[in-house]
Length: 252
Picture 1 (cartoon, rainbow, N blue to C red):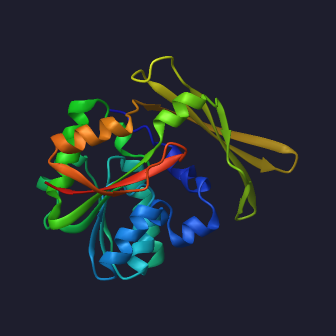
Picture 2: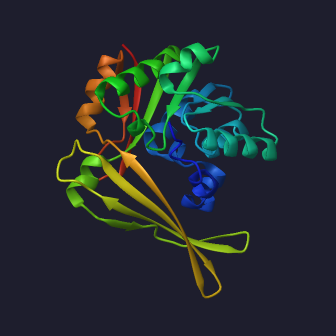
């Protein structure tokens, strides 16, 4: 299967501002931050949707013991480069969520599936298998963290173009990032995001465009699938008006 993040992995960090790169992105959201503060440095964390490794690196710098995995080989390679550059001893590998228990020894206090990653486990049965794999990576009393875009809000508002509210400068380059959405009439149909990076070079603009496919789920869907996977909600920062939310789950 083709890696949807091939190519995109090299540009992905432009999505985040400097404070997120330094202090974490999804791990700074309220429910997740509360959990990590309670666990504290020294806790064992599996970042099972590590992307380019931003949050895993932040957690390691804070004193957590971190292992990382992602379903995209391109993302894994970028994350590994980040860890080497920062001198962080974080093992990282490509692995699908359902395969984690067989691929990684040890169990963890916190298992992260953040960055709106779970939507790539398309459909109820696939998602339940993914959630089951994540649950099995948590030690007794451990937590699984699911972070998601609020798909119901996106679908209701149908804002076709969503632009980041600032341009970002890095290494002498300036970039503006936007999403152009294809939102179908039915919620359960494929949703397409065209993720566009506009790089400025003098009076020229160089666009990089990537197409990502999603099969959304509702907050209610997530609860049903957590239950089927042997998990229950322990905390959340979900709200109908929120653009994204996290659910903290524990084994039933």
